[in-house]
Amino acid sequence: MALKRRSFNLLKSSVISSFSRSLAGNRFESKYSTYSPIQLYEQKVSSGKLQHDSHQHDVMLLLDELALQVQTYQPQKQSLFSQMFSRKDIPEAPKSFYLYGGVGTGKTMLMDLFYSAVQTSKKQRVHFNAFMSDVHKKIHAVKSTVPKQVNVRKYESFDPIPPVADLLANKCSLLCFDEFQVTDIADAMILKRLFTELFDRGIIVVATSNRPPDDLYKNGLQRVNFLPFIDILKSRANVIDLDSGKDYRQLRTSADQFYFLTSDADVDSRLDELFIFLTKTSKEKPSPITLQFLGRELKLRKACGPVLDTTFKEMCEQPLSANDYLEICKHFDTIRLVVSAAAIPSQLFENDVDIREKTEEKLKEGSILMDDLGLEQNSESHKSLSIITGEEKLFAMDRCISRLVEMRSTEYWQKSSRNGHQLQYNE
Image (cartoon, rainbow, N blue to C red; front, side, top):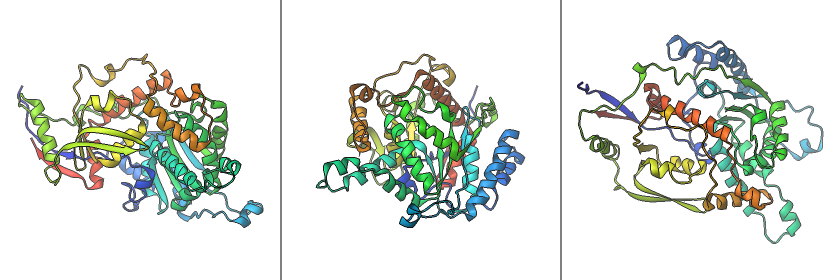
């Protein structure tokens, strides 16, 4: 059957920015929406972009109320006076929200509609891994500013969390987290202290997660020390289950699929032309590049300006962490990754994936974070710095499959046009 040639848009992938970088600009922060969150949701339903979901609608009404509260909310800055006397006269912050559910249930979509509509300049929408990575960097920076000449006991007892919380509170009063999950012991040990300080400073949090609060960091090392954070989260946030049993990404029709079609037998050459097309305006030449961060190096075989040309082996067959992928996204806004497979995504994963030990490079990175947090490192905790159970692996598998399906949709590619990155390519 002859393949019909068609014209289509190549849209640059959205970038997951670190907290510090994305404060300078965020794809949802270019301007305020003239509509409320519930109006934006109902518009998408009316236009056919969303299916009506009564539970989503009810949650959107709650977020609509929060948006109105945020509009007039001014967090009270901490002062010596307020710390010395009762805080009962200080107005309480609007209650935060924690939305959880399975993959494709609309958690992120609802949060993004809320975020785009809420009328405040002091807001930040960030992936949770990027946020924690930035927090660890800030902790390390704050600790490094403490004079080494001070009494050793005072230095060891110095808590860097309050100064870091001050830095964050000065930047925003509304924090929206996507993919809230805890798999790292260094993150687990810090969350209770960090979020207590953030909530005390009046910061409002809206978070999405695949897990209910009670299942966060499940089976993790020293989890007993993490449990107080769960109590704080449940007391400070409205916890809402969005699990409808539907994966809306999987329900997209085949007519909405996005394909690269060619009648050329040499498909690899045609795909290589895409890289040439994407980099034709760059003054640089394609070459290897080494990214340096957190005291380590990440070598990539081919890049040109903001475009990375990579392989599945380079991205997935070496021990890379979330921080590695975040660093890649900070440097590149387009990633060309061609993958061949013998089956559809849902048939590529095994249900009994084994837990692999982290490499020495990952352990070294974790050791720095543990030192900054003042956590004792025994051999057991050192080896298991990042704990991902088999159950969580299955969760990650479902999420990955759902995302791959979403990436085939036209709507996914059109999202990037909000950044102004749209390239025309005729095939």
